[in-house]
Each structure stands twice: as C-alpha cells, then as structure tokens.
Image 1 (cartoon, rainbow, N blue to C red):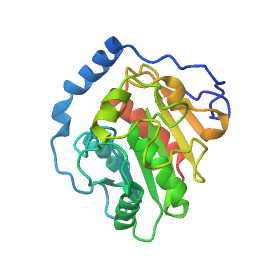
Image 2: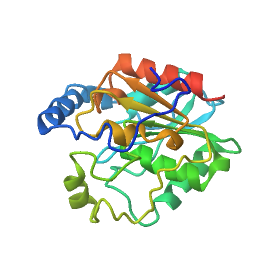
Image 3: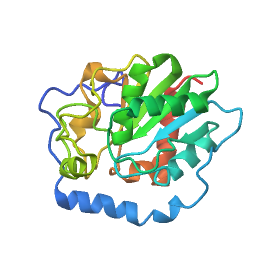
Image 4: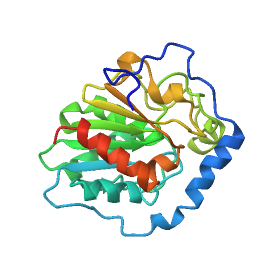
Length: 239
C-alpha cells in the first residue's frame, strides 16, 4: 500500500527510526540462505531484445547472482534486464558513478533505462539518476537506506570494515533530495537490517512509497513479493 494518498511519505523527523535488533537481522538473513538455489542461472541480459532496458544494482556484499530472481521477474514483464556487471558490491568508491554511467550507456542504446536498486544499490541508483536524468526513465529502490542519518541500520560497522571509509563520510556525496526523475521507494515493512525511516524518507524525497509485508532479503527473492514489486513498477513507470 502507499504510505499516503499522494504516494509519498508523510513521516516527520524522528519517526520510524527504530533500528532492527540483531535477532531480527538473523531471521532476515536466514530467508536469504534458504533461497540460495535461485542464484543459479546465466548472468547475461534477460527479457525481449526489443524491451525497454533496465539496470539492476545489487546491495552491499551482493552481486548479480543475488539479483538474479529479481531480474527474471522483470524480464518476464517485458523489460530487457541487465546486471550491473561489477562483481560484489563492496560499497562506494571514487569513480563508482563513472562506472555506473558507463554500464548504463552500454545497455540502453538511445533509450532511457529503468534503474532498480536493492538496498545500497538503490542509494547508488538515486545518485546515478541525479547525475544523468536524461538517461534514466525512473529509479525504483527496494529496502534502500537513502534518507536520514547513515547509521539507521545494523550493518554499518561491517560496511566501514569492508568499504574502508566511514559510513557518514563516503567518497561519493549522498543527497536525500528526490532525483529529477520519477522515483519510487518499495519498503520492506519487516526489515531486519534497515530502519523504515531510512527507506521511506520525508515527503519531498520520493514521488511514491509502497510498503510490502516482508523483510530485507525477501523483498528481492520471495516470488510473491517479486510479483508485487513488478506490478508496482508496471503501474508507476511509463513504458
């Protein structure tokens, strides 16, 4: 469902900032482990060759294997879907937006592409859309912590260890304001990693917010949830 009648968040500062417990995190991650078999398959483009291009960016410590089931569902809906092609997402680095733009140019031809980002991938996708709005049809984030302070999650310590920089001092500026393209946030209502406040944002940070009854990992792997994700994208994005 939408958070508000106009499809945007009505959260005020301080609301929804409860960080999930470590127990909730363990339960959430376990749902990822039981679906590991859905990582099997080729990593090349999927969907009709004449379909509108779509780029899917994985979350922290994830790869194109992790987003394979998500890309399958988007392909079945008629998108020409591509992975990000950069292996495991180990966090932001100098030049990440240059690399993402090069990938976007390689897949889109002369058409604007849909960008879908899961978790940290959505944060990166929003900055890509802000940088090159003329190349992006829309940006859709799944359980992405794009708003509020950078520690509204229970994985920031691991992030700093792997990425090599402080979570609140990344090498790429993160701006919560809405990118100048249609922007939708799909929120995991039972997220065990990221606080809802970070995924929902304030009223002027997103065009539409949709809440799904699932955790951080199920939002991109559970088949019932993926049907909902694809349906929401279909109704939101102008093909």
